[in-house]
Amino acid sequence: APQFGYAAKRHVSELRHDGYDFIIAGGGTSGLTVADRLSEAFPNKSILVVEYGDIEYAPGVWDPPKTAWGDTSGMSSRWALNSLPSPSLNNQGAAVIVGQSVGGSSATNGMFFDRGSRFDYDAWSDLQTDDGRRDAVGWDWSGIYTYFKKSVTFTPPPISVANQLNYTWDKSVFGNTTPIHASFPPFQWGDHYAVRQAWLEMGIRLAKECATGDKEGVCWIPISQHPISARRSYSGVGHYSDVVGSRSNYHLLVKHQVTQVIYAHGDVEAGPPLLEIKSLVDGQASNLTAAAEVILAAGVFGTPAILQRSGIGPAAFLRRANIEVVHDLPGVGANLQDHSGPQVAWKYTSPPPFSPMPTDMLDPVYATRAAADFDATPATGPYTLAMSNTAIWVPLSNITAHYSDLMQQIRNLANVSEPESLHLPPEYESDATLAAGYRAQLLALANMLSNPRAPSLESAFTTGTAVSAVLLHPLSRGTVRLNLSRPLDPPILNYRSASNHLDVVLHLHHLKYLRRTVQAPTLQGLGAVEIQPGIRRQTDEDLVAYIRNTTVQSYMHPCCTSAMLPLAKGGVVGVDLRVHGVAGLRVVDAGIFPMLPSAHLSATVYAVAEKAADIIITHWSRG
Ligand SMILES: Cc1cc2nc3c(=O)[nH]c(=O)nc-3n(C[C@H](O)[C@H](O)[C@H](O)COP(=O)(O)OP(=O)(O)OC[C@H]3O[C@@H](n4cnc5c(N)ncnc54)[C@H](O)[C@@H]3O)c2cc1C
Image 1 (spheres, rainbow, N blue to C red):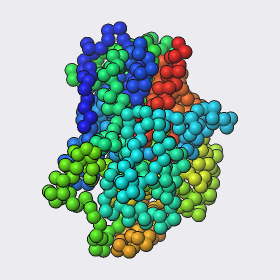
Image 2: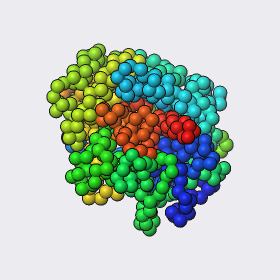
Image 3: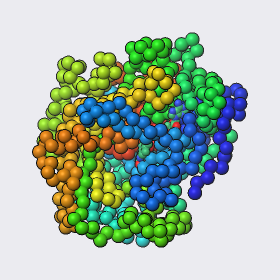
Image 4: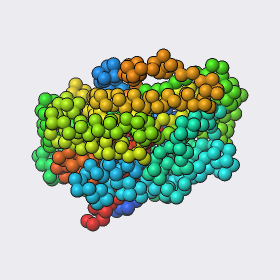
């Protein structure tokens, strides 16, 4: 099991008295990646990470002593947040978890470790420029691929495991130099292959490797765990405890909240700002100085909260909140997106003879053996399987014959003359730059979803009798705003899921497509009967009602609230990840994504952070 051999700092009196060169707010997935790279590249510069949480052991999602599938007890610390009600989804709110320990969300996530499709990142780049020179921007697939490779070490399974479980991969798309591990579990539950087979029978292609940028088909996805011990591999180990012993220039201060950044006399051009922090142990506030830069990595909700507390954000909102406007930046806390979708569930008329199954864990002999197998070297057995490592990614053109009509509707929406018709959050307060950015995103999404190789739907499977129809590219946008009565608490999330009615249409097409899984010969042969949405629900009206009642609004992939977009498109950071219009301040977390990728987010966060580190290193190497 990973060990943290090096003590973090717990009190400001333990910090360097002459300040640091770089200070990073948030010791999560992105923050520790950047800290590792900067401390490696600049032995003579000092790096401090300030983290809200503490050093904790971070078990995998399904590590002993769990005996029930889906049990999340014993995970490292997390915030459990609820958004405001989403009126389009029967006023239900999104339930969102956020990591709150060293390693951030990588210490508590589902360990599904996939990259997006090349078209996702090409769209990111297209949004930065109006001249079609996506390669010059550097955030397209070819610009980020190097960092995907660099950010992870993939170890293929032993050949016996590969043969037994039919695993396929292409090792050449991984760099294998960084101690963030990706590997395949040497175990699957007995029902796993039935659903994979059903998907193949639906005509979904079998993909050998889905990390190449071509993400379409039935894919095997690695898990972020060590190939031998099968323990969680995450930034708290790979980018902190594994490296910090040899780096006297890399400090971590835990149990401190970054409250705001402060520009002396409000002069935002005289950067970098001071970083104001507060001890979560004794409440003491202190100001820290960074000679080179302050880097915000407090996550999709933490970073906009820091900026808004600092007076950097939408001016009208800040004025109403009685916060002095230091810099008007409408995009701070705008553009919130997440993966969402309803489920398809079935039952078997009589239990098929699948073996092994999670119910076996109820047998003390099986469970004891499973725990022993997990502690063996190499680890084997059920505990080596995290949340899932199979999923499908399906383009819209394979899902519905109406896809070009739908794309035309998205393009028409982008071109409506009345901004009120754009379904934008009231919190945008009719800001023209945010509306322009949203129109550009709609056009980029219409182009992408028209592409017969760009996925629109994801569905993952491990075991059980349900699959989710996950909408990869929502059109609805939400917001993050400071909680004015308790500004140091987590901010107010307004998910506004399905506020753009076309998202409901996309959900409907996805749901109709995914329910074919239950009708596929393999599941029919096993006696599967659909129970959700249920065979009684056949009309579009019934299915839309089901979508509005049951859609899961967060698959724990919030993003995009400090978006990398030009100022004229409501952006918060530029392509060098500097916050627009202020000096000495960057953002490097999942907030900088302009739009969601066709993937769970951690692999992209690592790649973005690796690229961010390179940008910062190049800048400071030039002096
Ligand atoms: C339950 C769950 C399941 C997920 N499942 C998967 C999955 O299976 N696969 C996948 O790829 N992705 C998954 N994700 C998403 C992925 O893990 C995150 O998108 C990614 O880790 C975010 O990285 P980040 O650096 O942006 O933020 P984080 O890793 O969350 O880091 C932010 C850090 O900042 C700290 N912080 C916040 N505010 C402050 C403050 N004011 N001062 C100091 N510190 C602060 C936090 O404590 C945290 O450590 C999941 C996420 C969750 C929560």
